Amino acid sequence: MALSTVSMAALGQQDLDVYVSLFVISYFATSAIFSPRRRTFDFLGAGLFVVFSIIVALRVIAILGV
Image 1 (cartoon, one colour):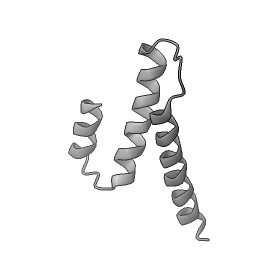
Image 2: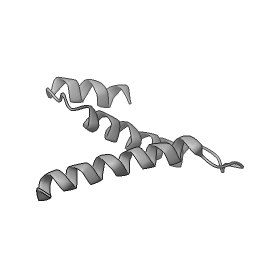
Image 3: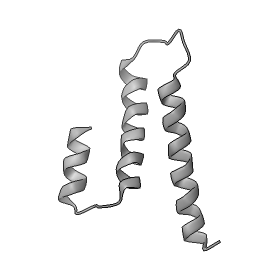
């Protein structure tokens, strides 16, 4: 995750939603690879998924010009 932050900063990215989206994708990728089967509901994952969905919806609306 630190590598993605450094590389995005080096590329001159200043949009917060890009960083948040990248962190959410990194969270789900690392949790899929490294975490064992959960016994409880993943509240953090659900919250991050909601935030990611809102960001994607806002980007789609901006692209479509609605």
